[in-house]
Length: 444
Image (cartoon, rainbow, N blue to C red; front, side, top):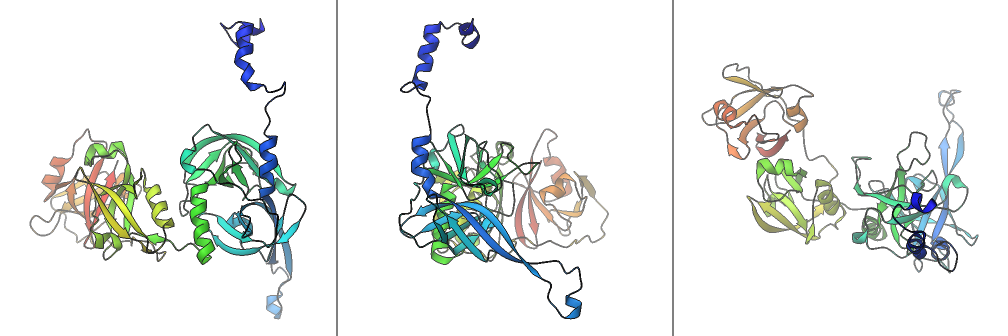
């Protein structure tokens, strides 16, 4: 009966043979040998911060300073270079700390120096002076696959080193904080408060990521944890070791994801990549000849399948580094070399003011936009007004814009515009001129 329940169609002998590889010397498989080698490389981190207490008694009004208190925090870290004493952890674990101590598995407690920290990737680099440190081996990020078994090692709730296990649930997760550089490994291995900065390792004990965040309604593990992948970690550590900060590069373009649905309209020759929708004047991109509607599909020979991948690659490239960009333009493959310059950290886009001149003749509406013929012959279609929360507003269309192309075909008047629209089209590509600059807006 049990054989029929557990493995329909299999004899008890066949079932036993199927299970045999899971048993070794009459014992269940164990992670203990791997963990014995790896856990000394994972450390507990304790920090102290001096915080000013709320001024509830009016000290400032009397010319006095409110009292302060010493707040303590805990997290985890990983030794990545035993000779130099380098330890990586999360930025949020050590941000604002007045003192940082590292607890080793052998019981030693060491004072750590903060070498550098990067809020945008949530990575910090510490250094300790000690011998007999154990460093961790780094995995090959390109070989990670969804479904691979992984083990999380850290210091949850400050109770001491703890090991949990699970699988890689997803790769390339982003959107946790859109201002940050994200390419997370998602795992169902339990990660809790205090695990931040700890190791996510494969079954060979190699570091695949640094545990950094969870999604949870209760503040405890719900099976959705995130780790910074080892390739991004290595790039950030290189910056921090050299400069103490990450000096991000920029190309000077605005980009968006290219999808098969958008490809149906634009016919650029590839189904994914980073689509250039604006080139900033006098930028690196402008100087090397990048154009609106160019599709970036590779950097230095490595595939680029999304705008996030391009942003991460450029943002983490060293300033003055030359990148070879693989492009699709008008269906043809080409390459462009661009030398990265330092990012100024400012937004590349500025809001444009409405230039509605009151003309009411020859008007039309399109998905929440009020359109009219632009002044001058063959000038295109001017956007007189845009309803907020409309599809075209979400796509970036604004009052004052001039629509010069629809689906890469020139538009000279409202008549042209209306003729080019297809009722069956699920995506419309608008070539727009704003303040003398060309933009590509995708409306879906």
